[in-house]
Amino acid sequence: MYAQMIQSTGKGVKSLDEMDPTERAFQERIDAGGKIEPKDWMPAGYRKNLIRQIGQHAHSEIIGQLPEGNWITRAPTLERKAILLAKVQDEAGHGLYLYCAAETLGITRDEMFEALNEGRMKYSSIFNYPTLTWADMGAVGWLVDGAAIMNQVPLQRTSYGPYARAMVRICKEESFHQRQGFDIMMKMCAGSEAQKRMAQDALNRFWYPSLMMFGPSDAESVHSAQSMAWKIKMNTNDELRQKFVDQTVPQAEYLGLTVPDETIKWNDEKGGYDFAEPDWTEFYDVLAGNGPCNHDRLETRKQAWDDGAWVREGMLAHAAKKRTAKVAAE
Amino acid sequence: MNTPEKAAPKRTGEWPLFEVFIRGQHGLSHRHVGSLHAPDAEMAIKNARDVYTRRNEGVSIWVVEAEAIHASAPGEKEALYDPSNDKVYRHPTFFDVPEEVGHM
Image (cartoon, rainbow over all chains, first blue to last red; front, side):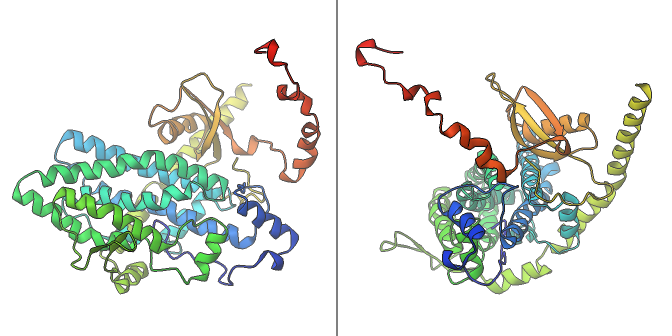
């Protein structure tokens, strides 16, 4: 997902009996569906986990602007260009909502930026794949935003108040993203043979990386069990991946496209599709920094940060000067 | 509110944090929507417009430096709110109105 492989304390989930009264009250509040707010007591692990998860989620929104930004200047029509621009601007907004939620946990925004730039914090593996053709704008909106929605809708009920509220805002805006992607795919699939081939090629390249977004199976993971007990993760990776496949395959059929998985088959018994797992070696490799665009994405981000330094400093100096002038006038 | 228990140490060169409040179309009060960083209040309002009102969410924006906000402490919850809990007669449902009297 936008936050992948988040490690918790690793000690497994404590039972209520093993907790001291403060922690027990905290857990019982979560179990009862209550919200935890910034100034409330929380276990150090909960705070740390959330900073990692929300931070990674925010970084993904920010880095996620790059693959699509790549096509803004080359959108086929003025309307498509305006739509893509609005979509990318939303991603920036989503990053900002999330940074603001993470900051309530006691980390500063600049610390998070530095951690991203220095590779100490990650962003989603999906954004390390290139966007080679215009059809990729369709595939990204349809599949990548589609997968993100799967994860973000349940997170609106997450236990941490500021995170849940950021998710509500994000989900309201996200469905425009998926629809504009699907709209591009519909247009291309109703077009010339070459355009259809381009759409199929985009699906072929983005299918498995989209499945990877949910992360490897975590049914046995102590980290996930802890996150689920804390309600900062609402479903297992496999549940969400299954839901995504079940939703997406009929949409591909509608488009007249073939999902690049020969084994995919409806399973009546489980009421969902059986499908092939993505190549997890590739996933770990991309996370380790060896995907096709890791280097490029991070360098672009660092350069933007460095190039913007004089603006940030200049604005602060200007604000200070105005304050002094105002005091002098009083 | 963005007022963590232990505020992270302020770093040099970081823009201050502003809390953003927006009044929607329908005459309701300003409502807290989130926060952002800006060099001063004027820029904070401009940024708030881009971050929080991309879809006509509001007709008026307030920004307040987060440091200027005073909040009640979670530990005082009982002391603050308990006294009103035992005054049930403050709610109209406390009083039975005979059916014959009709709507009141």
